[in-house]
Image (cartoon, rainbow, N blue to C red; front, side, top):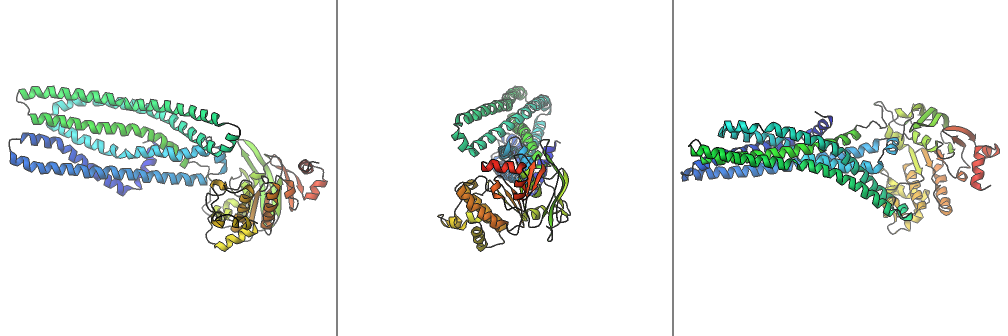
Length: 571
């Protein structure tokens, strides 16, 4: 059995009680339907006995009731299981995305749009396939009941009819191969469409600024046409089975009527037998068609499921050792020892060594691509180094529980991400152990309290998607308040003021200076004017330290730092 189908069955097994009800309902439905042909024969043959017909009428009503109720539970329960399995897979994917390291997210070809496509489009295909899973169980069962009826009614004719089965089996197999082939391309194209739509929404300001609306429309139109072409091939293959099966069914009914007409004329069969056989034959067509559709749809489901489980089995996670420790209570330094890290086969950090004493403020400067942000990301374990180690005190950060490590690191970045919620909830950032007074104190320390009180809803003001209803400076101050509220002993400031105007920068810088007091701080700096009071400034070039010292020491050395400083100051 293919791996992806095993994985789906494993997910279904979590709802084994529901599956038991589905199976029982399917058996009852198949048994009731299976008896209808024999019931019709008995009823027609008993036409001359009114009393017997009356008693059989109650049996007919019971059969109809049994079919209706069992069919309801069979289909309803299967649909609900499909809904639950699909939601479980969405939740697993979302949880997986949150655990995958930044290297995976930066490297994923279709970006966030592609991941959204797998979460929504691929799982929708899996869900549609699961809805038909009940038919894969009930259709063969019903077929067996119908086949038994045909053998009971006329064994010789049934054997002749069965010679057509291999022809149908070969045809279905060939159609299934084609569907799997085109499904892969179709799903990948749908992923590209989702990525384009998300890119259009994320970049709407830039698109409008550069008059790129037409270009994005044409890109989506081109991708849509390719998708429609692939779906046309898939639908053509699926629907090609209809004319074949309809032709075979019509031919068989005419042949059966001719066969029984001769036997009835010779007194070798009754009208009841003829009608019962045709009824059973028509009923056989139902499970065959259902099984065909279910089997063919499963091919699409296999493709989508393989993509979903490929992501769920992705190994690009930050792994935590089974013996991981709490964050050390007593530590004296953060140490980088012979750290190396590469990205896209490019060495960003090479044999890097650094010891940061507790309470120190360390600034990293250098041109883009010099490795500044990477060093901070390695400390928070957004990535893991390929060589060397990073320790806090005596403990390798890989041996510290990941949740505790990140709990003790505060982050304020250039592009502060705010959730589409209230200002208060964004400052709390999921930390519910503290009360609302702590939120106010954090905002005051970040110089955010005054502007928050000016909002219509004050702390209950919603900030919009990604904080779009606030200005850049306001977002930064809310981000700083969030770091105050977290109260972590280690702080990372990743170009926290580089995107601000002069007025906003003054307010934000005040908040940052207050925030850094008493904390071990790593500053990734673009504006060198903001790091003049750092205890140590490291100048990086291609992942290596080329200069280090205080602001005054580096200015007097006439090296790379002085050149950068003079360039920014316009000297």
